[in-house]
Length: 113
Image (cartoon, rainbow, N blue to C red):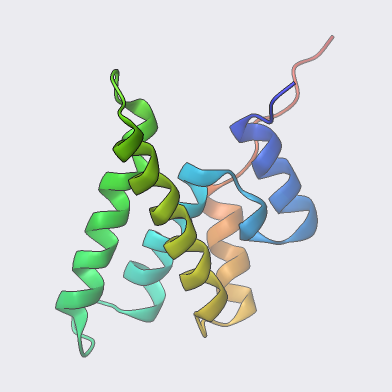
């Protein structure tokens, strides 16, 4: 049975590790990290980092498209790899990284049986 987005969020919350999120969430997490911590609007080189965040935002939605080509999946996988690398290289304090994880990637409660 494949992992669901909620499984990834649950695993990431349990380990306090955003890299345990699934692809679209990894991309979204990196985008938020770029925009809200590392490269705010008035920071130096914001235009580059803002463009990267915009690119990641577009790539995050590739799985939502109704038709896909192999090129789409290559672009998506490359975006996931860039996002994961960015998360690893970010010098944001651990508390900030955990706050982003808790605020935006909270797992849904388990359904009652």
